[in-house]
Length: 227
Ligand code: ADP
Ligand code: AMP
Image (cartoon, rainbow, N blue to C red; front, side):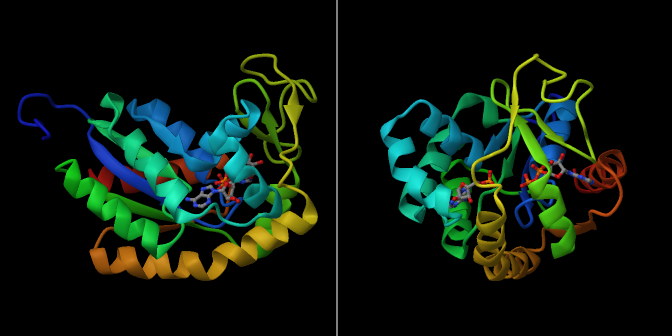
């Protein structure tokens, strides 16, 4: 149970919605560090599992490589376990989950089990042409996971992470064919999720035109208005 009457701390449960490349991870990392709440990205969980060759990684790999969704029965269990961890009790940002209505319904049940609720569903809206530019130029640090863009957010030294000195690589699913498939796979599902959270009364939309800092200002103002 939240005890906001005792502590005047930030407590907010949010999800970031948007097509692949919209900037969910970029903004979620910044919000996470500003408000000190965990950033939970299902894509990161799967990529770590693949890197460590765990049973989960083995299950998820073929779906991710093709740009398809990992089946709900795998994904929902992972999120349920993660949200039960102690660091989520004062809020969290879910990035990349839910991606289907089935996942959204499951998340609602998980919130009930935890005696809490979602406070905000933030949809980051970006034109499709821009998504392809963002995804094809994305580079990520293979050590710390920091995200860059060759043109829009380049590192100080080409190929090297500013934060930890690790190597920057291109995600294996950021190739042209997989990118197009990921956008197609997610388009209709994202529209349904927007409708779902609009009906729940917690949907807010921001247009992600402008650079990362400009979008961050819009994101923080929505967060502040809804806390
Ligand atoms: P998502 O998590 O939604 O798939 P990312 O946050 O990884 O998207 O962003 C995709 C790419 O676009 C990254 O290379 C990132 O640096 C870049 N990017 C994110 N936000 C912006 C923005 N507002 N303007 C330009 N490039 C951006
Ligand atoms: P992302 O890092 O969010 O772009 O996700 C990368 C890939 O992980 C997706 O293309 C899917 O294959 C898989 N994935 C991430 N989140 C989910 C989810 N909520 N449901 C199903 N698959 C997911």
